Length: 116
Image (tube, rainbow, N blue to C red; front, top):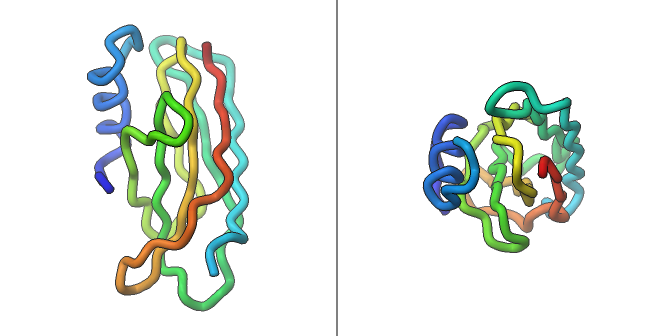
């Protein structure tokens, strides 16, 4: 998996797609997209924390093709993250937890965020 900053999410998505302007199974993912403003739309991914006693952090993965994330962002123990996604595309977002050894759990159900 590739980890990076939130700004790296936008850079990698734009580079890969020039048409764009710029047990863990209990994770639920909710994304609320605001009306696009300028070059990006503020999208917040939020999920319920795992209470299994093993989860120490989360990874949010984003792609423009179902099942094929382009970037994975380690957000630590937080349970929400703002994703500056450019309008004009459909994004696929998942979250997975990991333990102290950084062993990942299964990903959440994929959520489709349509900003096209």
